[in-house]
Amino acid sequence: MRNIVRTVFCALLLTASPVATTGQQPPAEVMLFGVFHFANPGLDVVKTDTLDVMTAGNQAYLEALAERISTFNPTVVLLEFAPERNAEMQDRFRKYLDGEYELSSNEIYQLGFRVAALSDAETVHGYDEKNVQWQAQPLFEYLETTDTATGVRVSTLIEEFSLDEQRAHDELSLQELLMRTNDRDRDALNRSLYMLTNHVGDDDSFVGADATASWWHRNFRMYALVQRYAQPGERVLVIGGQGHTAILRQLLADDRDREAVDVRPYLE
Image (tube, rainbow, N blue to C red; front, side):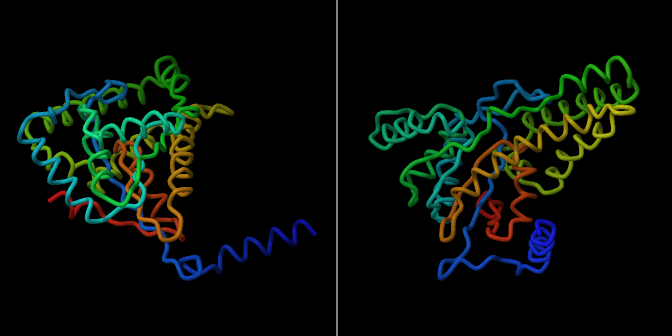
């Protein structure tokens, strides 16, 4: 009996309509906004001295950008901090509305707080995942001791990417950098780095695939939080590092119950 139920369920999945019906309400609209970390903590594999977003010119651009994105009129603003910090960040947001909190350089404040204050979103929420992290140490140890050829290739690419990113932050404007962090080709390039080491291992060792799966696992959890907020009728703005949005954008594209809204026209 259980096998029959499973077969019927699988058949329903295969024949389901492109968008699940939800009564009278339209599906949620989700705008993913990939960014570089304005206040870079230096935790990413690719290291970069980032552009200063606090200059007068960049502040003027961010204020105008927040106003443009607010025309999307998000009802929910999701930012890259852990949900456990919701009460703390919501209190900070209320103080900002009251003129009692000065925005620091982090994109959570420079973009998230500004847009939320100009839209229908009553507050901000976190969607980051801290309990599942990228489990890359076994992979790096294997590359160093066993698969040195792939290790050299990875190190070379990381160095090339770091130089390319630094050159971009030295030469491009803030607008150009944000267009870059929402470029679909660069999203694909970001994801391809994990495929480069996915095969690593031998016999019953899958250190490469396990490392890749752990990063996707973290992002699947983050997207689950997005889904919980992105219910029918909602307009959801999601701001996060491109390392996340490159994957979240794929998940959103495959989500039958939610519609993607392109952030790029708002950046111009």
